[in-house]
Image (cartoon, rainbow, N blue to C red; front, side, top):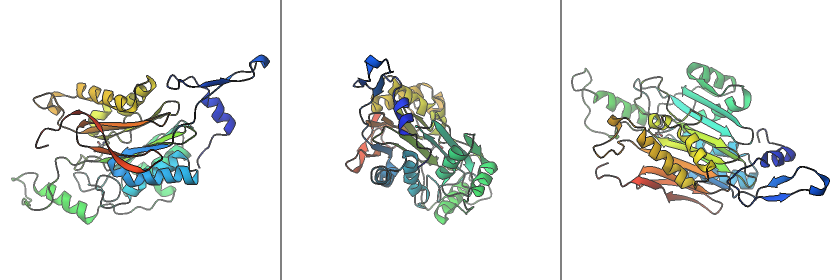
Length: 353
Ligand code: ASP
C-alpha cells in the first residue's frame, strides 16, 4: 500500500463540498458547536480500461477487493499484464518501435488520495514504464522524467535494461521501412502483416475502491514509426489521464496529438465535476477534440480520419466510455465480472475504415 491516508485524514478530505454527491448525510453534534462532517455514501468499486485491459480489470478488482490493495498499485498491476505481453504490440515489451527501430515507451499515473502524479516519456529498455512512473510518483518531487534520465532513474530503482524489440515487432518495422518509398535503397517487401498507417495503441486503467479512493494509469509504445523522441499524450498528466479524488478519473487511447489539444483527461474529469455522466463526459470531450482538429485530420464530411477514445469513472463508481466511431469496446469490472462493453460513439464507422 502506498501512502495510505489515516482514517482521520480520509474523513476530513471527504468533507470537501462536491456537487456530484446529492445524497450526502449531515451528521455532527451540532449542539456542541463542533464542525459538521459530510459523509459520502460508500462508492461502488469499479475498474474501467481500454479493451486490451480485459485481463487487467479482473486483476485490479481482485487486488482491491480480496487483498485490500491500494488503487494505484492495483491499476499498475493491471496494465503490467499488457506491458509484459510480447503479443500486445501497443505497449511495453513487444511494442512497435520508432522510425529507427527503437522501442520508446510513455506512461503516467495518478493517485487520487495523495494527489500525486508520476510519468515517464521516451523511455528505452524497461519493460514496465507504468512501474517507473509509479516510482517517480512515490520517490521524487518531480512529475515527469524523460529519455536517458528516466532510464537511469529506473536502473537506480532496480529495473533491468532489456531489449524490448521482439522479432515480430522488428519484422514489422523492417517491412515498414522497406515499403516507405520505391525509390530508396531498400527493396519493397510486399508480403507479410500490413498495419493500418500508422498503427498505435495504449492501455488506460482507472479504479475506485469502496472508500472512494481513485487512481489511474496509462501506458503505451506510442505511435509506431514515430520520429525518435516523439512523446504522445499518454505520459502527459491532464491529457493521457487525470484523477481528482473528489470527482473521478478519466483516461484516453487513440491519436495522442488530438487528445493533447483538448487536455482530454482533465476535460473529461471537469465534465464529471459538472455532473455529466461518465459516458456523456467522454462524448463531450470527443466533440471538443473534433472541433480542435486541423482540416488535414478531417475527411470531406468533417469527420476525423483518426481514432480517439475516453474511459471514465466517477466518485460513485459509475463508469462510461466513448469513442469517435462505432464498433469499439472497453473493459470493465463493476464488482460482478470482468467484461467487454460497447462504447458510446459519435459517428458510424465509414465502410473501408
Ligand atoms: N495515445 C497513444 C499515443 O498517441 C497511442 C494510442 O493510444 O493509440 O501515443
